[in-house]
Image (cartoon, rainbow, N blue to C red; front, side, top):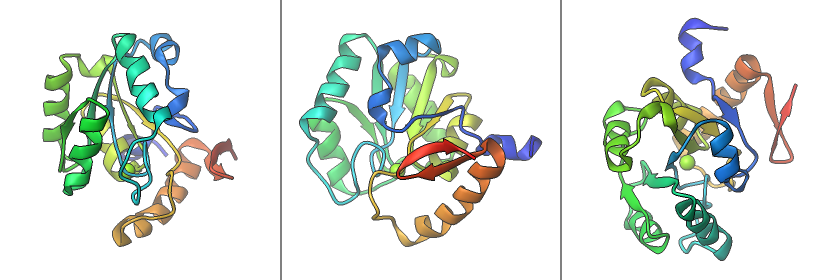
Length: 177
Ligand SMILES: [Mg+2]
């Protein structure tokens, strides 16, 4: 499966955002991140960032990695979370459409080729990021709570990831088929 389908293929699979540290980024010549919120850094039903998440954002900032939060969620909860993490935010973003990615790159001040999008969804985070020229990084969804239309897309996602990249989720971790 190539051509059209390659737009849906994540550049990288990681088991958690915490696997993304300054060293991981440096090796891949990346120095900025657009970060999804729901089921990427926090479950949908959680609204206060924990210590581990705050420390993660802080350690990236200390290493001069720029971060901007990018979420399709329209609720004020996203802005509160971004504020708690001391990060700028684009929400609602309208991923996978390009406008939000262009705006995000503008806010980061870093070229697309040196920027990654980190998210849990193929049809918003990965597709949008790939089309905008970013490195797409897919994490397993953190929580079991998804919107109804997301639950439908999850089924398609699993099929695509298996066929495009030979990756399946086992016990919440990526695993080669
Ligand atoms: Mg998400």
